[in-house]
Length: 387
Image (cartoon, rainbow, N blue to C red; front, side, top):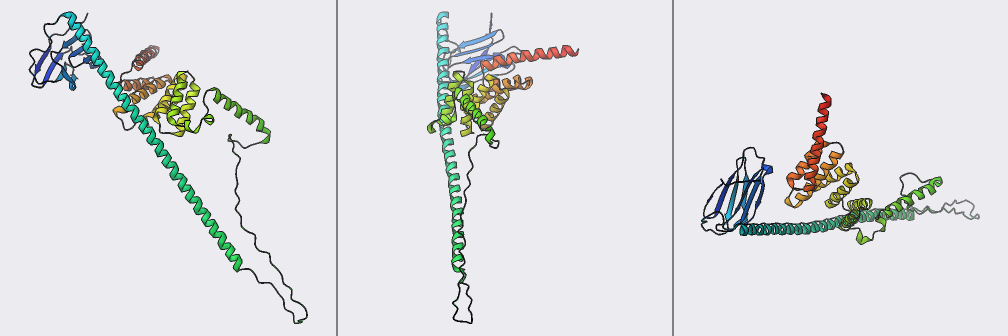
């Protein structure tokens, strides 16, 4: 049964209320559970419990709570600058107190959920804006490259045409005169020798036959190669995704991300990896594709690939901000799980701890506890074998 803390102290000013709750020495700060709302405060640690129903509501957004090794300090901002006769609500029945407490907890949960939903919507809008800007940037870059290629081609053709005109001009001005030989005997007619004109210059264009395989083409291997390519195409189609079957408007990173997530829900892991990989090929800096593909690699046991995708995603989630805090926490957690499975137990546990410092996650928390237990058992077995 929990021990209720009653030896707390409080004081007030015109606009603030301060509450100091003592804690037992040696209590880990991470084990202290705190809940705050405009009119209800709660703190629980070990076998101790503290709660208070405030007589007046406070501005929870402008208030703060500080945990030290000796006490928990609540610094509360008053909504109205009035003097409080007492800290807690007085003259209230136990049943009414429980009903009021449940109501305040429910209102605070709804407020937190609303804030989370608003942040999620803002984040989704920011992602859509970022993707559109990236697509526009890629389009402008391609247009600039195409324009440069076209200018270089026109310049090269201009130099070639100029050279041809100069050659034709020289040929027309340097035509040799007919070679004649005059004899003393005027009765013999002169003989003229005609020299043929030089051949016109032409340019040759060499085209190579497209080939899927990197090896040279051989007539004796053609049937085997065609059979291999047909099997590969059929395997990609059976997975549910093949880039050649996509329409032009479907070759969009956002569409491919949604398509891969659909494959993941139906456990079509090969199709999901194909969709995410093709999206990365189109837009290498679209970080959500790396994050999604790391989840699939982790599910099918491609732990090295999962580590690579999480590392690449963490490089792209810069600068660090609260907008991408959830994604960075997920990347660290998945990379920790993959490293542990690859045999790097210490590094994997460290990554999971770093993830939980950024954001609490029930799955990662349970996984970390399981990994720690296995790691400690292995250490004990190793130590006993040495002895």
